[in-house]
Figure: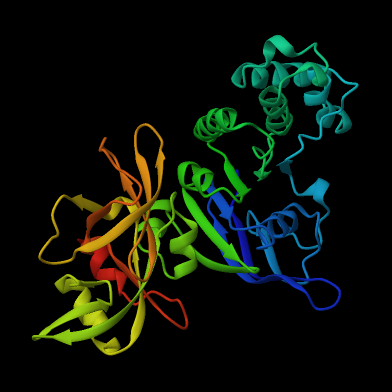
Length: 372
């Protein structure tokens, strides 16, 4: 397998449109990296530049230490799996998987050995003589992946490969691809707009927006320690709540004031918030970090009225409003919630996050928090 490195890579189209802007990252050997972000963020363009399907406007791309900017796609020893499978409908499963090897003049015995071995790994051996049109969506996706595996490439590239599958099959294929990565011990780069796919599959996530990398790192690091509001909002289902508060000093202690509630940050957050006294900031709290109580708490209580109830079985999502703002809470127990009722929420302030109102960057210094 191989190491992939992008150094100050740009993609600029006619008219000066920057699809990718100064992208720098490394995919280590045998790592599973996911590029994630909304449509138009530059993730697929970045993947296509790695594959050689898009020219790099500026910057350097290295695969296994070799500069490959001007090396054609067929000579990069990379395999790409597309969203639409790209199988030949008139060919059998066997011929679809063998086609790339046949074009490279690989011996028939070796082709047979590879296709048989990979088809067993992907549980499509029983379909080798069927036409690809006779397969289900999940089976076609396995064949598309198998066609890549038989080539023994240095790097696997996946461009939203599960988007055309139904919800249940996407969950199954996520597990299969993760297991396949472990089994092959391969270098994989995967593009998706689905943050759940990113969180569950990646060793490292790279979050992009408007062609710029917002943050990269292990999934739970990005979830727990987002560097800006966009990352905090994009990762997490349901997403983080954002409430406007003003930092104030009251009776010798720091408080986060809103006309609907007043919150006291924990001691480890105070030193980072002190410089924002008398300024409005964004208070972030995830739905699972809002704890229900039957009676109002003396400290850190948010009273909110239920406007919508979404029962999901294992948990219930509650849409709520205070007198000034809306938020969402997640209950993991059965309770007789009713629309119009006012309930009390106590946020877990140790899990609270704060963002600058103008720049939307995090106000917390995370290094000390990560050590705890």
